[in-house]
Length: 354
Image (tube, rainbow, N blue to C red; front, side, top):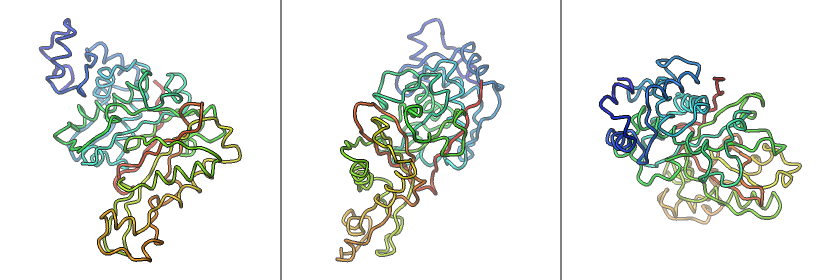
């Protein structure tokens, strides 16, 4: 059924009643949406450069094929401008990639959000915020692109709260979770370049994850990374959950983690992103004793357990490092993944020129 057929009977001339009817249809995230009129949706489809019925991706577990028109309609409802459509389209294609395993993070009790990280020229063209109030309100592009992803999940992928979305707590990033990297203000390689794209290419990365955990980091890079590693190693995240409970053979469910670093780039002179990841990866760990005290592994804590460490991140490349946030001082955000890499892996897609 097309968007337009499903909306038969709506009085588009009454904006308040239209919003109420769309809410009754279950097409919203709980907030008012922009009416997806045929003319407005067609404008977004045209901006995509694709036909309305072209399939962007599939969700076989729910027997869903996601066409361009559905993505366009949800981008309209989210409040996007037409020029945002290529970014929304790339984000949808990325989360529908089999490697991302969308059915996992979209239906689990853990309640992850899907963070969208935009890199390349289009981030500047659309004025996607990469600086102050990075995860907060105030920027239309960030707010509506992130919201479009959530509406696509609800309306096109059946990730309906209380039905297939079984989150116990959820978090605010499930309304909207979109940022950009301040890549022109740092000597570090941007995220998409590290992932094999040209610097001049626009790209979108999607990452199933928890909400950002703010870290106050002071001093030298070494001191700051020690603080970040401590926060990243905290008990209670998906990364400190044990896959095997057989005492000494315990293995944590290693996954990816995103680290956002703010402030002045000059603080990190002499450091590459590779250097930062190489320092962080071995320091993100917990002792078997701590894992036992958390109830993840049964058995009494032995003296040996205090010095038997379990790495929470398997490889330095499993750390998504992003330079973004305000310039006033160095603060960081630690964002654990929804689960181990075998369950969901971040995916980066090129943004198609409209």
